Structures are given as structure tokens and as C-alpha cells.
Length: 79
Image (cartoon, rainbow, N blue to C red; front, side, top):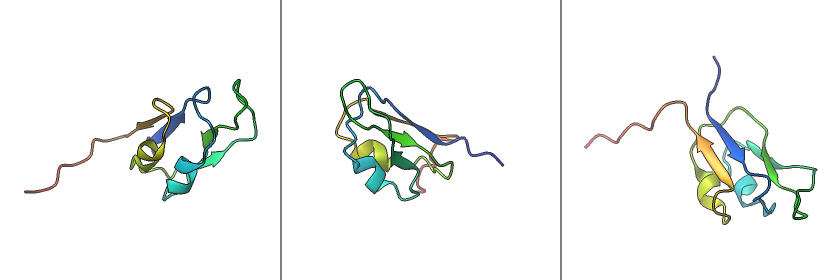
């Protein structure tokens, strides 16, 4: 079974602050070794155990730097 949940990090916007890396409960993100055009080492999505919880997205202070893709929509809580 393939997990279709994943995260895309816009390496041109990421400043390598590690907030997404430290927040991810599944440790799906890590700081890369390459330097981007603005001199930062951006985060990168590395592991496919992602549940698309969105914690990395909410932790990121840089608008547009992280996009979370979910295989299936979240189920609404029963009322």
C-alpha cells in the first residue's frame, strides 16, 4: 500500500529555521545539505510515513513555504 500523503517544501522560500522539522510527529522532514539562492539550507521532505497532519504547515513562519497534500480528506467529527 502506497502512502499518497506528502509535503512539498518551496526551497526558494524556506529559511531553514527547523520549526517544521522539530514539529513533525513522524519526523518526515529534515534540513537539507544544499544551500538555496538566499543562502539558507532549506528543509526537505524525506520520509513517506507522513499522515498529512499539517503541523509543519502551521509551524512554518514563511507563507507559502510548505504545502501539505492529503490522500483523503479529513473526516468530520461526529456531532
